[in-house]
Length: 106
Length: 506
Image (tube, rainbow over all chains, first blue to last red; front, top):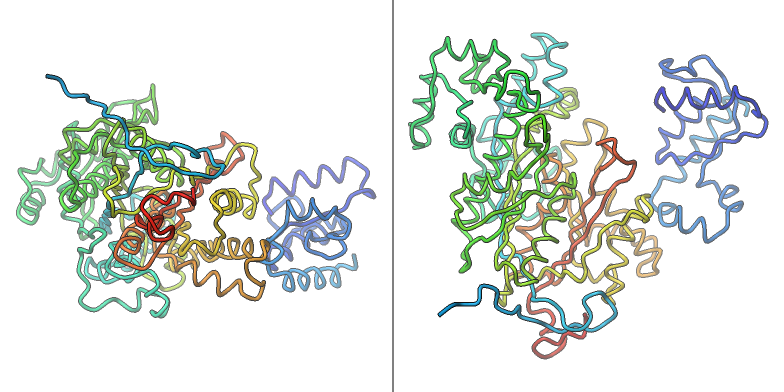
């Protein structure tokens, strides 16, 4: 997650309505899912960006999670995600989310 | 008595609902293709990434880079290079353990049915020939060696002091076997950054490699028609400060290759440009305006050594040490060369989605459906064929494998195959990547030598070329780009429909 994106998210959170925000990731791998999920919950693990040491604690979900899919109209999900569901490493991504959530208590 | 310079185009009939339904234009074929790989280890340090990182890395990094440069013999014996020049089938790479540089091909030759690998001396001789503005100079000693080794005419030479003065005056050094420059490129203007020596060396390298490929095509592909138009599709930006990227390197390449019968122009579309060029070349031939159009491109000097850090870290040689040029011969139907199906060309439109599966659907599923074809009716998909041994050590993944996964997923989504059959589909209809990371060169076209052979003398029936372009890199849009073209066995319609010009398949 680049420094500019971290800054934009930090400003958005600080602008208020933090309680109404959720994050839906579209990260393509387990590694990128872990990195972004950690950054938005516990702070930038690389200590390079504006979110270093800033635990936003945002609720983080992934577009491939069954609960997220169930909340989206089937035809929209088919058009926007469609066969990528078959291509991406869903079990690995789910495991990365589980570990991040266990570590952050979010 | 006068002859009609534009005789009526041959026509053929297609049915169906596509844009070409009804009386269509003349059939167009791809008659041949030639690639040139110019092995230029002495110019790796002039690539964009090494140019930026070597000064910071100091003498140690320079020495490490130098120690990992390959010999010409190893570049020739490198299995992916043998695939590029058509001497080895792409599928044969599956039988060779990776990384492929550890398994050089015994007895490999620099010439193949799809092109040739040339050494640095040959490249420098062509660089000198390409220099129309008298800006390239070699040392007297090296100029004599060049003339001896390549049989080229007189090579422009300068004294060591003149070379040194050129380098002090913003010149660009040319290296051969060690850290002493064997020549220099002078700036084209005192102040104009678009004519700096760095830019001019990039452009001259593209011109020389494009001309090498074109010359080879003209020498080897038997064609009764003269070349009438050249379409350039490289990634260089030729021009001065008032028209950076003004272009028309195609015409300059034609001049250097000895073509006198053609004019031309350039097509710009990042890595997708060669397929846009093929579409336009096909349309020019189909319309009857020209009988023979060649799509041509030279190599990208800026991309030499682009991922050298990853290669050094992995203990690999620096694998991005070749400039690639290509020339593709597009002409009227000759009765046997593969047909370029213009009615099945698909271009990613502004309003189309840009997610990988949305792009793939626009480029593969939709044009095939319009012809009544399924994804599995395509024998081979040629996608971005980047060599994974080059990209993976730098963290860029296996590009063709990712593309084939998406096409297989679309086949599963369409119910053509089960999800469990996706890996088998990707293997059967795809291939390993083998192209040097030369941008536009890697995008689908490296398969052309194999496609032309397979669709004429081999067992292939249909091949789809699928290219993408990263338009967003230029900061003018957030969009990507994509284009696909279908190639078909010339006799397919006759064979499948049981009669000449069966046409029923549209």
